[in-house]
Each structure stands twice: as structure tokens, then as C-alpha cells.
Length: 156
Image (cartoon, rainbow, N blue to C red):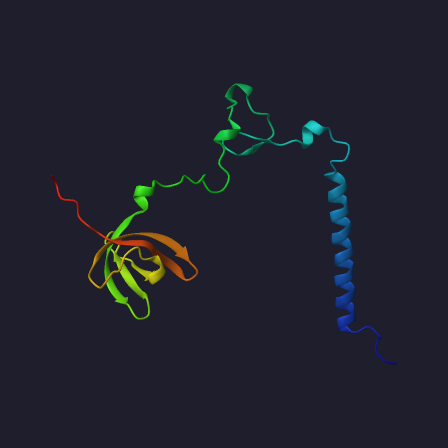
């Protein structure tokens, strides 16, 4: 007669299926053996010690540190308004176009080039003038406002 209806792949598939069933039964037995249902609350609790490590023993109450709620900083530190005298900067006008009404000032402290518009001028300026100004955040970057020609105070 002919060969058996079982082929090699059928046998392999049956072996795989039997192996999966055995593994599933073993896992079920492991879960039953390690079942914590009905365990007391003390057995399920975990504590964090002073070093941040998880332990099964409660921390020593003698080592407890009290922290004031006001001392806790979340996020960015509280903003302290700067002194108005610190906001005034000095610089030199590197470029100014009278007809278009804008130019640039080079900050003498950090050498940044800051945009200045004619609306931010307190008095007329021209190139190479030494000026004092304050800086405001504009839609495209920093703008110089309150621009005045710097007059050095002479000692008496």
C-alpha cells in the first residue's frame, strides 16, 4: 500500500503544539506556587530608605528629616525683577539709515548686534555714536529702546 498520511512537517507541528502545552502547564504551576493572594499587607509593602533604595524594612524614625513646604522648588526658580540700573546697556551705533529709520547697535559688553528702530530713539543718532539703551524682546529678536547718546560724566 501507500505511505502513511503523516508527513515530516505534520510531526514537527504536533511536537511544537505539545511543547507549547507543556510550557503553558509549567507556567500555570509556577503561578500557583508563587501566588501571593491572601498574603498580609505587611508582606506586600515596600519602603524607600534615606538613599532612595527599596527595602522590606520600615525606615528608622530617628533618621526622619522634616522639610518645609516653602523650601521645595518645583520647576523654574521664582523670578526676581532685575535692578533698573542693570538693564541700561552701552554700545556703539554700527549702522543707521535715516531714510528707512532703522539700524544696529553693537553692545560694548557682550559684542551682540542689536536692532534699533527710529521709534525706539529718544534723540537722533548717527553712525559711530556712543549710546545707552535698554533691550526688549521683539517678534524677531531683541530690539534696542530708549536709545540716548551717551555723555560721559566728568569728575569735578
